[in-house]
Length: 500
Image 1 (tube, rainbow, N blue to C red):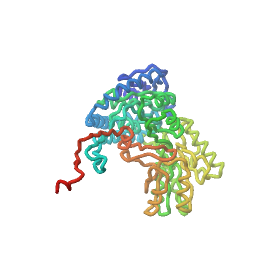
Image 2 (cartoon, helix red, strand yellow):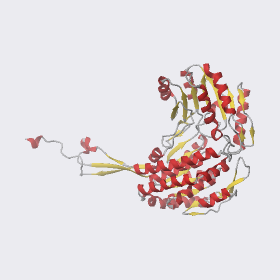
Image 3 (cartoon, rainbow, N blue to C red):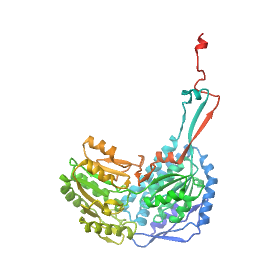
Image 4 (tube, rainbow, N blue to C red):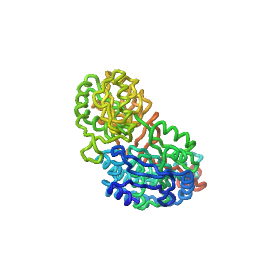
């Protein structure tokens, strides 16, 4: 299937992708077309899963779960290692598919596929590290004469629901870690990226992934809701908006959940920062993928003594960004996922201007392509400050006092990641302690991530950590073995009688 998908991309044909169910690429549901946001033509097409297909996939997963669990960790690791090499070997073709389906610049798309390769490699390493404990139960009188051990067993059936903004790498995280843990996985692909999702599943299968380890379904929220509600599913990993995450939790009921939800990321620029360097970093990471990242730079708070200098340098840096065809290697800014998303940037920047802010750049769009927008000095109640824009817009605001700016950052209902530019170690530790976020990037913006480092948030940004080692904790359960009357620790409690 991978070869067929990539040939369609190379030949500029519509990529027809089927579900992968019960070991075969087949599906009978009504086809949904994905219109490329830059090309404005059909790029890919996939059948929506029918209720009967969902039921069969879930039922078959229950049969598959013990089969996948019986595969040794070394075998799982070897498959994931081969998948890593295959991702690199097919990087350019996969990146082109990403760019076509989502309007993501091809250079950024190549980086995402390189991250896929890295993520599979990390998953392979973590498969080899899964272990357990010998428990020190003889340290208490009640445990003397016994032995106890634990190991991390596969949870069983995992459900991975992936987003459109980084569909390849986040699928690698969820499916790669789930397989590393020994689970079978139901994958619900984003409707905006059926082609790249199917390509990654096909790549894994070509690398030796047993068909029992994965089933791929296409469709929208109703398909996801049906899968979440299925009692056979043991654990759900979801990445998406806070509103959808809440719906996932309601549908799931009493299931284990790992939710990576929205963000409204803040970056603090202190008076000791190198303004030209910071401005370039904020421009690069505020508009990469057209701002469609949960940790994209959205709010920048600059000490008032450096505010004017920062705005000048930041505006100059944004002016150098190239907007255009995502397939052109020289393009920095492609299109957003659709016209509604681009219109949100236009609408919210106009609202901020009406509240007294100054729109220094942008505030316009051409179809789904939003011009990089800079909003200076919006009030705290403006949408660009309160809500997640998830688009090509950065709001810049002055601050006078470090304690106050910490409180302003924390006023958001989100708490995923923040950036801080300073060389003051006291401020660094104060921010790390007081900022209500899952991660703090020092001398970098909020938009920085390493795939082998724990990543996740607090408040409405969700819970759980989306990185292979920490995901495996969610994808496994601790099983205890108790040996009564058999001790590796020694059984005697008193040697005084023997000494006498």
